[in-house]
Amino acid sequence: MVANLGSLAARATVFLMSTRPITQRADAATYTNNAAAAITTLQNTWYSVGTGLWDNAWWNSANAFTTLADFADLNRDVANQLNIGGILSNTFNQAQKTTASVSKSMNAAGLVTSSYAISKRDYPTIRGRQMSAQGFPNFINEFYDDEGWWALGLIRAYDVTTDSDYLDMAKRIFADMQTGTGTNCNGGIWWNKDRKYVAAIANELYLSVAAALANREPTNKDYLNIAQSQWAWFKASGMINGDGTINDGLDSNCKNNGANVWSYNQGVVLGGLVELSRATGDKSVLTDATNIAKAAIKALTDDNGILHDTCEPNCGSDGNQFKGIFNRNLRYLHAAAPSDDFKTFLIKNADSNWSKNRDGQGKLGVVWSGPVQGVSGPTHSSALDSIVAAIAVA
Image 1 (tube, rainbow, N blue to C red):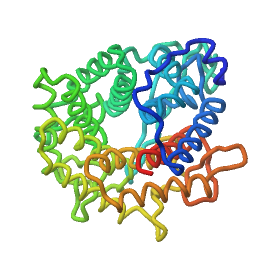
Image 2: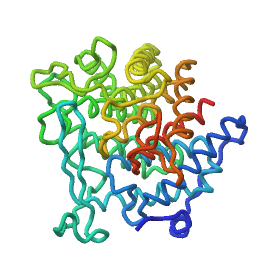
Image 3: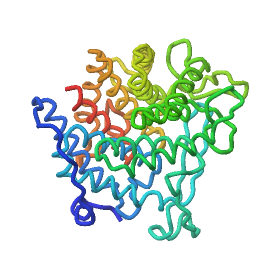
């Protein structure tokens, strides 16, 4: 079942407290209106009230969830008009009891393809066979990166609602992520519970969740200790290459595997370092983040300053999500360490998405410079991230 805003609002309306007056300049108001329109399209086209997911995509839905929470933090009044509080609550309740099973494969460049089978109560057969409903209780599954995405989203939902259920769930997820330690590379965590690959993304998420929890649970020093040791290990691991960008992971000998430089691997670490700096007062990690961000923009943008991944336009459901994650976290970094270059980048990419990457139904594709291609829930929510980021910097 695909929800419209009316049906979801009838099911559960959760209002968010407006903590600030609307004093936006015209350009910020325009981005707010654009984001609201894109959120409406996202909900009407891809959201299922029954599963709490967008386009039946598990970790991607965690990112859509995060984006909606970020939008709500920027404009509570419009968020209430869109019933974002109700959407967050519904996803929290429904998603963790919906997904049945997951499998992932990775190509030589490090591009992951994820396949999720959805509970039989909504989808009786998948590829001709009956599936038993298993679910991912507490948002925990076999992949530590999947868990990290949900933990970060739940923390953002806590920030905007002050509902401790979100934060408590994030802490439960992180406790499971800790079982991924014990790699053969003297630190970090494994990508999944098969314990065969040390991936950049899982380790960036581990840093980010630990640092975020350190700021929200300051009396528990374990979170801060983990975040500090994780960054020290990551920085020395070799995953940051000679160009200052981050490859996909480490090989079996704990050396940089030379796999692709994906935009999301350049992004998550930025948000993690912002949280770490906030927790410690150490501004040097913001310099580290700024250096990674500048290197990523240099490596991954075209002549017009628009962000790309090398998989375009055939990035699959996973790669379709990547670019928005970079913009979201660059926005966090810009708030902590302002840069005219970052602001220009964020505005350019939001503008390009709206003017060149939007079809007649308001759907946003995978190639941000246009023309519109490969439209899906993940491409749309990823591009939405760029528009939400522009609200904050305009």
